[in-house]
Image 1: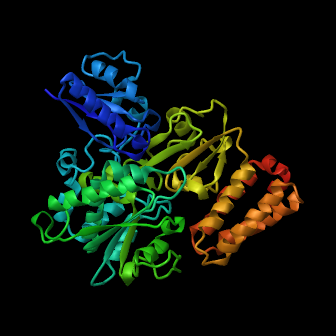
Image 2 (image 1 turned 90 degrees about the vertical axis):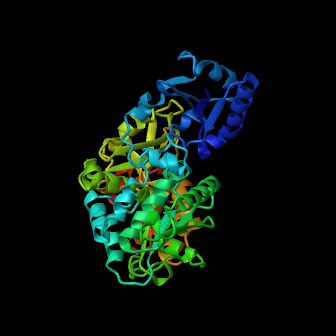
Length: 519
């Protein structure tokens, strides 16, 4: 009888030598005359344990990690001998506290299945949502998404159902579904993990969106720095077409929908939806003025749904289980779950999918295990490079869109980057402005000029050159960027700058009283 091991093909595992590890297991099994089957699955999201190896046993999957080449013989000795004493053994994978306490809806299959096997996908509930959608009227599909409370998971948190309804109600000969997979925020990796670990969920979600609004064509705009995701997606798209889930006459119906994969060129600004459309049409990525909205005049001038990877990959769950099943998770206007990504100075970095409402402190300590350095955590940036820096006094704020707005912060894409007490917050604030200066498309003056001047002002503050007056100038400059920028890049860069200034004035050589006076 052949034994089965699961070894991830996720980029995080590959970076830690997962390919060589798979080869070593096969070679050692052959030397022993053992029949061994290796399934390359997605990552479970426990990145501090990568490469994680799971042995399929009568008691379920048993986890070992992080596994090195020299551990291969001993794991083959222990895996099917009912021996839990191996130093790398974590017991049943599902019982690991980091995983056990999560609510995995969008990521339910990630790490469980062969990512490019349609049969495996269907065996774990895949395509049930699309089967249901094939028998529904477009307006009913849109109503289901609206009632679920799903909001855009790319950062803007705009209600998905409203966007879809606008496209549905706009008459046009051609409509499009565009997936924004240009995941460029620092500390974020949920899109990549989903595309590498369960790409068929994204493909199914885009197809359902096409049925809902009357679109027959979709595009995935993929970040250029994700070559492994590109390989997995290309394979999954081919498998879906061969199985009749993409193309003309989906599963014998009169519905048609197909998807093309396009790679971006590495510009952060192309994560903004209108800049993405410019790039997709073959032009330089510049932000478009709105109106018109992309939902009315988007790709090639046609009505276009633009959603990010997590938004679209969540749609199959909602269509399969119903709007109420998703809406029952979360709090207030933040319904469902969000895959939070723990990074930075954190002991247990990885992906945590939880319903809205837990606190940042719970995320940092119950899941992240505190700082990796062992020193006290001092600041946490939530929401990517444009997110605010939060001091410990704000870590008990519920992770909820509206609750974060009340403290001048944002959840964004769910990225959480932790810093211990050695961090220089003035340097981090300057980095935010430098980042904006580099990545600005240059179309609007507040972003193009403000980020450069802001970098210079912050350097003078750090050099203690008339720093109190310079701090006042920085505040005015940030106000101009907030109010006058054309898109979120310039409009949100002040968030990390002002939060660092407000909460950590001592790093700027300023008194708390001066900062409160100018804020």
